[in-house]
Length: 567
Image 1 (cartoon, rainbow, N blue to C red):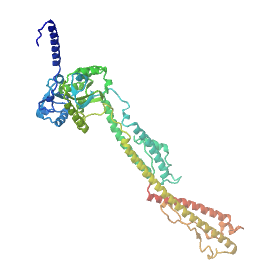
Image 2: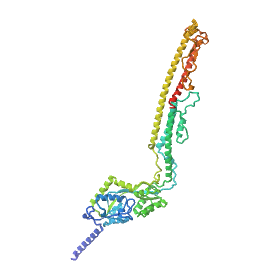
Image 3: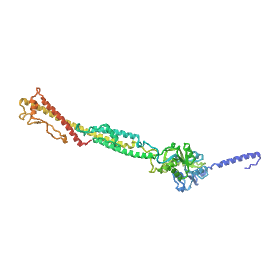
Image 4: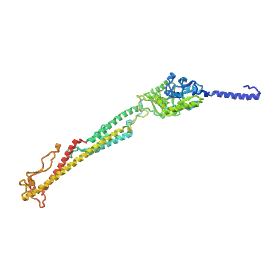
């Protein structure tokens, strides 16, 4: 433009030139927007992709692009296939982290996009970066070295079981003692008559204490029948299993308590020797929490290994880095453990450079990521690369001192014990019903024999009276007394031989039956009843019958024991 007409015109032209120059400078400072015809979805031009080594989400250093790996790499591969991008269009560049961010901010075409899990933070938004739907969520976590500690937990021996299980064990021990006591009293069919030298039934209190001492092998439980013995047997098995579980879990907890770290959360970090990445944002985030951290370089996997070595040799008491980095690294380290929760959480995503305006590509890229998350592919990749299974050498207890066994985990033992009590009670009921039936039969037989004896005595008494007045039937053996002495029509019992056998019968001699010396002259009373000597004979016969009934019952019990041994 020519600026040469009159002084007024020259002034106007000078001002216009200055404004034009300033506008040109301002325009040159902005990144060039992507032309619509240069859309990565529609054009076939080369796509420049930047990344940076960031284990475990990106592995690219000293590798060919075809050998790149990690969580972000595999996730992008799934997106690439759905976008229809071929590998020959992709131009990969592995660079340092801040070099990559500077290239994205410049927007000069060096990086069309970045696949490196770039955090969607304030600093990156101020750079003018554009992000897709988040590919992962993370935050800060703490790694500590597993080693000896001076802390002592004096109650670690109680941490094997939850309190509900402890309470159940104590109550069950008391209940078993009471059940055995009751079973012994109710089902003890082998007891001997008093005075036969048998020990008395055990008391309740000793059985309860013996039950409580069973887990420690400190006492014995006195059982006198099969039912109570069966309960005690199952209870002993139950206590044996619980003792083995307690021993194993307590041993693990004792080991864990010795390896437990004093640092368990971010609140324990102030005043400790802490290391982190030298990035100003990392250091300042910790300073806001009152934590003075040492910044260390972190450009390669070797730098991360150096940080972990600082934990092992005691140079640092804690290492603060991104959660997925520490979780992946510690999963294969036997002497490093991640503790506490995640704080200052953030999202990471694929980043497009400043000045990116292709909203169609951005939406298409994000929609594919959402579909991968909904289908579970994103979670599966995270488990493969980030949440890896721990090594077999890993110890429990840095984060908490072992696992307490709950009542639900061993409730099957109580079910087994309840079943044994039910079986024992069934056996007791059967034995009691059998015993009741045998006693009823024995009493019925004894009553019949007694009535028969009494009738016989009455008949002989009448015969004796007739003989004393009329010369009677006793002399020639042709009367009602028959010939020879009269015998009791009963069966004797010899319980010491274990079976029913005849014994010498108690009988009234002919002299007794016909008014001999025992009837004191054979004179009947005026009313026709027996004289006192005859009454004494009847009473003696009744008493002898009662003794026989007791012996018969004892013999039946012995015979029943042979059929139902110690129910």
